[in-house]
Length: 510
Image 1 (cartoon, rainbow, N blue to C red):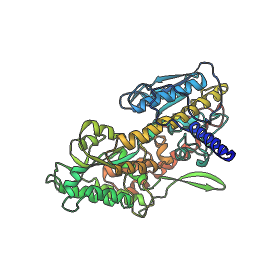
Image 2: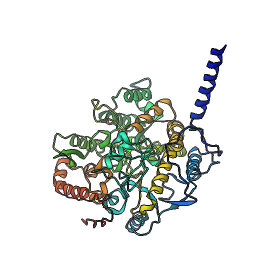
Image 3: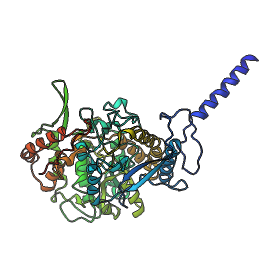
Image 4: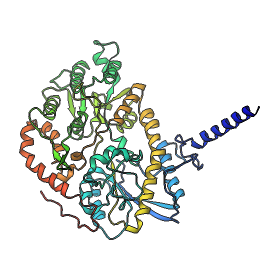
């Protein structure tokens, strides 16, 4: 009897522990229940109503990442509000969310913020990565990897030491000599929303290839699963669909194209999908440095350029180039495939009744081990202005880490499981492909800091120009190589964030 009682008590204790450890990841934000968890890896503090001010980009073109409503039926809005509430309640702070300039105004507004080294107006700035990264290294921002400058935050140059609250791969790619002044992760919804992908119209695909297969949609998904979805296959599909839908034929004016795409940002995506980088990290005399990738006729990017020039050529006639509005062609039935990003699914759903599938960008060749994903450089990145006073840095680090922690706990699961893998897909295969896409993010130094070379003049932008102008990649690269090296040297020299009081460097004029 005594033994039965002991077992019963052990069972009661076990059930109690399971209940205490339960994570409320399905919370829609509709209530104010206390967290049901044993341990939160955050420091204890009471900041007695102190304000933490975030400057964020605004405008209808952006995904809302900061303002939410606990009672909203929108699961993202509700969990954003829940995150904010948890942080304010835990630390007795007020989150002051200030909407910054949008569109063309943001760059100028950001410049005024960063050059103000005296007035601590903002504790965190959230804007487009490409607009902030290059200038963030010039002495205007604090170093995320320096624990004296940014205490508490769980970031490190070693990906193994970075918590899941931050994007370790991005941090590694953005860092140099123990410094990184820009970060991203679950606190940024666009870190996932901006993942490049390909959509296809199931009805048009089946119509185009129905004479070759009983189920072209299933065949396409199987290609992805088998690791055989390559650029050559995309070109083959684009040709066959252009020729097979509504009487169109390659090389003529077709009512329905195989593929609609832009020949700008989503050309860049092929570089990273092909596991190619424009810079490499090397150890020179015991010190890490970053060098330009050697480019020659046998370099994969030259072959990639030649294939894309062929795919996007007018003579081939299977791609309709639509600037940034390629999705409009797709939703109108003007193409079987379109390039896009995961957030494009919402527009496709709202603008059409198309039955669509989602697949990753193609591999370079079948021998490539994994699918890789380019996360478009307009995704949100975060900087902490150097104007944050030394006595406030513990406070800033603590609240920033708390925001990241609760974003990872509430907002990311809602976006990942309920929106991207459920609401925004129409079938199980697409949901599985979304997992592949999100797990395949590939970042690279030259792309993160691309605008340090000037507007569209970095090695990361050369491929799109070669495709746009139908020129020779190696010839163009060699003509620009000295310029690429000059700006890379200047960029590496500009990592000044660990020197307190360092004078911001002068911007290099072209």
